Image 1 (cartoon, one colour):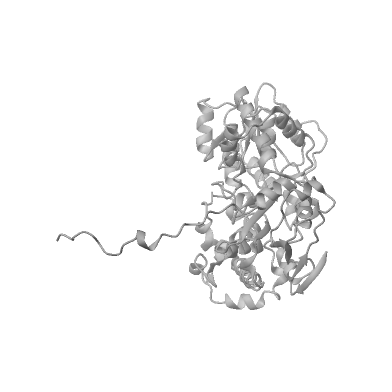
Image 2: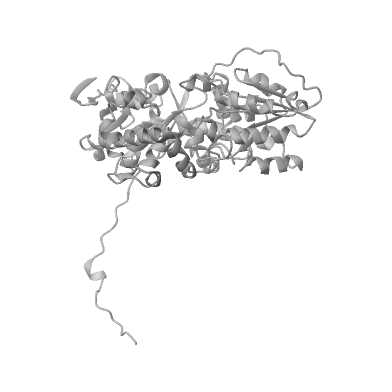
Length: 496
């Protein structure tokens, strides 16, 4: 790598073309002129090795927007916790001195709405608070702004200040609107959302990436909005199935990818003896998610907080005396929180204590438990948008999805907008808990198509797939109309 220019907070690199000794690489044209790599913390070789290797073989000029070790990188990884960085944001905070609750939703800086940029990190830092666990929150969170401002004004101001910082930061990069391509991780953090919003109105083609559940693959989509639980990949595959052949070999490869999966956050523990006896009762498994996960906050699902939904589902299922319910809280939640607490586990533990003793005996709350073991003993599987629902479908379940998931409505899930509708269908026995053969084949084709056409292997060479993703779509210019083909003089009379 050769440094061309070192600029405050970011660096510009000219990456050498290493394709001279690789005949297969020479078959691919790689001229992307200028590429903006948003940062090099998340976009690392461990998670996106094939992407960085591919970029290393291009003739493009690569700019790393946020370099590790800089002031900007400290704010990038703050993830809503800006308390230690008040000195960096002091000037931006002064701009917000007179902000009122009525201004929060509409306040703009240099033409950009700050709430739209900052709310994900506002919620990441506050959604675990007890005051937000007693009722369901509307889709856009705007309904809770007054309560947020009254109780957590400083947090809103800090996140707004961060948004102002990033607006100035990205716009300070010379010619930021002239890049051919920009690559961003997740798109949910303030630094990323701000860059995407700025570039949305330019010629720059933005690509957002995120690791997939296998740990060995990632999604990479051309978009200007956050990616968690909002991927369009499976919806687009429904059209691919009609035009592209998916072979049995592709299906076997997909199964192998799941078999060799290595989730980077969660390692499945060994099986343990379950401290509950199901007997002849139906076992319902609820797979929980991190209480303040971006897949909930910025995802396409309609449910924007989890605990009220979990409590309603638990209570509804336990009304049937012939049911046992296992709730699996996400083991990563404790590591995700600054306090180290698993709030989902704690809130549901408190809820279960308030249930009748007869129901308490039929519910088991766990966190770090082997998912495959729980699937083996279960009859039905429920979740909001956890990718573990895909594991359940692979095991033959037709998972119940509440609120919406990126893999929902594809023919292998039971999809419901809310718990009330789900419980009604269960009472009428009008849903199937297992996939039939046709539905399982649909699932296999979707997963095979996902790996073949949409997912990128993290470590293996994926030059052809990446080249196809980054190549600029062919454009067709408009033909000019000859002067003699148009007359400005009417050849008719107006009748009054």
